[in-house]
Amino acid sequence: MLLLVGLGNPGNEYARNRHNIGFMAVETIAQRHRFTPWKKRFQGQTAEGTIAGDKVLALEPATFMNLSGQSVVAALQFYKLKPENVVVIHDELDLPPGKIRVKKGGGHGGHNGLRSIDAHIGKEYWRVRLGIGHPGNKDLVSGYVLHDFAKADQSWIDPLLDAVSDNLPLIVDGQPELFMNKVTVATQGK
Image 1 (cartoon, rainbow, N blue to C red):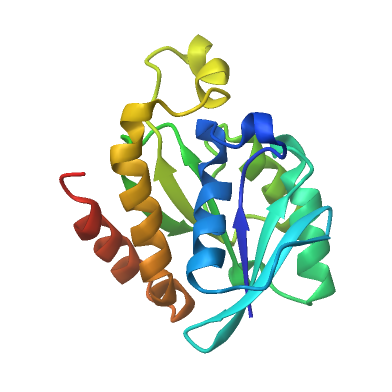
Image 2: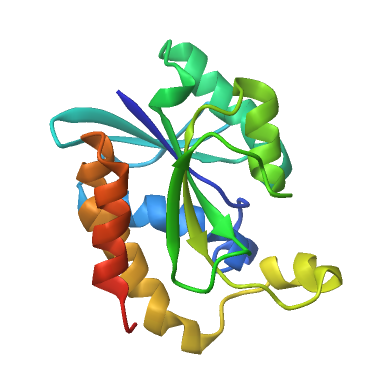
């Protein structure tokens, strides 16, 4: 079983924020792969489905970004999963818009959602980093991530979310490098 976590902040006012691209990705995956309807569980909302023959639990923590680890650890403990069975999809300031990186373990890079998850389950989980770009000045970061994507960003957001969803079976099959390559190829020039 795989625990697929999208990071973001709950509520309609945050729905299109740059910080919520993890929620956007998990919602696209759940819809494309015909997961069950969302229901409240584990201090968040979950939907269940099957991808590449494996059960996948999608989770959107409703604890706000800084407390995401509370929701993740609740689901992890309930299903008796290990951190390596967790894939977290999140926004990444240090990648250009639309770029993707996948890695297991590592630091939080100042991302408060990852910092919270690290504190609750350790660092040995998978991270799918979706680039949102950087505002250019660290003093502008908070306002940048908590503002909606611009209309012009739709030209790369939708193809990125589609490619992540379409190629997710590769992550489930234990092929994160091939997943990253396929998403990169599918979104080149977008």
